[in-house]
Each structure stands twice: as C-alpha cells, then as structure tokens.
Length: 322
Image (cartoon, rainbow, N blue to C red; front, side, top):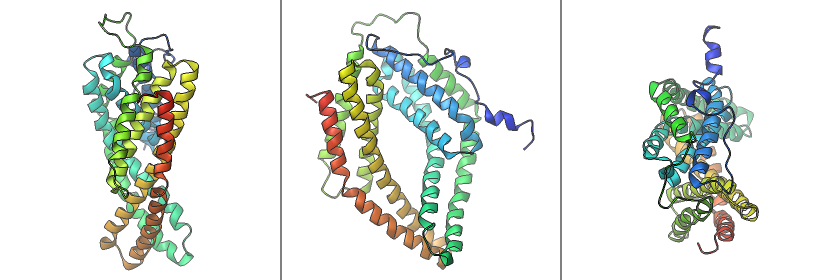
C-alpha cells in the first residue's frame, strides 16, 4: 500500500453534501407529517453509514462494520414500514440495501464468531492453546475472503448509485404533494401496533421447545418493532415518548437474548462442520467449544419468554388495544 492510497481509505466514498443533504441531520417533531419523520430517519442513518464506511473498509475496528450494518438495517426497516410515504422508489432502494447488507452480514458473522471463540479458548489449558489458535485462524482466513468481497462492493458503481438513491429519498422537498389521507406523526405511533401484532402472533404459534430457526425469526420480528419504535419516538408527545423508550429498551434486551442464542447455535454448527477438515487436536478443541455453546443455548432458552413478556407489556402500554 502506498502513501498516496492510504488516505483514500480513511474518508467515505461520498459526503452528505454530495447527496444533496444539509450540513447537519434534519430534525422532526410531533407536529411534522409522517413523511418528514421518514426522511429525517433516512437522513440520520445515511450519515451514520457514511461515517463508519472508512473504518469498515480499513478493518481497523470491527465496530465500524457493525455500526454501518446497523444503519443499513434501520433504513431497510424504515422503508419496509413506511417507504410508501416517500415515493415509489423506496422499494427498489430497500432491495439494494439488502444487496449490501448481505456482504456486510457475512463479514460481521465472522467477526462475532472469531471474537467469541477467542474469549472461549482463552480459558483453555496452555497445552491446548496451539490447537485453539489453529482453529481460530481457519475462520480468520475465511473472513478475509468475505472481507475482500465486501471491499469490492463498497468500491463499486452499484454502491455509489445506491447512496445517491438514498439521498434523493432523504431530501426534504420544498412542499409535500397533496394527499387525500396524509399520515400524521400520531399515525407513526399508532403504527407500532402492526409489528407488535406480528411479533405476538409469531410467539403464540411456537411450541414449548421451538426450533432454533424459529427463534431466530422471532428476533427479526422484534428488531422490526424496535426500529419502528425508534422512528415513532420523535413523533410522540412527552408521556407517549417515555412509554416508547421503555419499549425500545425491552426490544433491545429481547434482541440481545435471542441474538446470543443464535450466535451459540451458529458456533455449534461451525464446530460440527469443521471437524472433518482439521487434525485431531483441533477437532478436540472444536468439541469442547460446541459443548460450552450448547450449555449457553440452553440457558438462553430458559429466559427468552420472560424477556418477551417485558416487550409485550411495554408495547401494550404504548397501544393498549394492540
């Protein structure tokens, strides 16, 4: 790497100004129409995505990639729930965000796995450390392949075009077009009922010992409710905003529990998949890790319904009739 190329990786590929956005993020309050809140949320999140893009490219801190992915997922959720309010281009943009999200997700999954494995094997005996390092290095190599794919995506014309499209959706028009039934800020708060109903329905149909994939899907429903609540909070009056904040906190905890459960399941699957391609010492380490992850999985399964009850109660407090 030359001195001339290094600085280019420390700056985003574009700027909010180049996307037609203002110097600072836009704001919206309870008196603004719902469409304004959608655009403001897109404005805030595209700035977050751009802010973490250089760190994601350089790979210096995995947290940059994580935060870039979070910003992207929030935009996808906003466009899924309320994209129609900002025009017909919302769905194509959401699809493009999904394309980039796949590449970000592939690398993020390796970051989570590698970080967790390092923590687990650090407690193993000294004599097992060489084999543990060989196991971890195998996933580090695979991460490198995924990271190169991501770097190509972030330097592609497709990515540049996607940023411009998001900027167009986020820009505040001089005047809103007339709508026979325009949505208000209050409609955003009332709109929390829909993702809450979907999550409730998904919980009710689960058996007492749900399949792992069903719990992972449940986490996604919870995430959609959380992101909807985050957008609705600025649109709410003070008392209602306080209730929504409790819902955000509850859904975040719900995501954490089910996310940790999913990470444990992934770790077990990875250990099972690796044993056929490694030496016996590494296979032994993989077995020890799998045993620990199965214990962690069982512990999380024992508490997730209690965490769900907190989400349900918080959502009922926001919209008692949901």
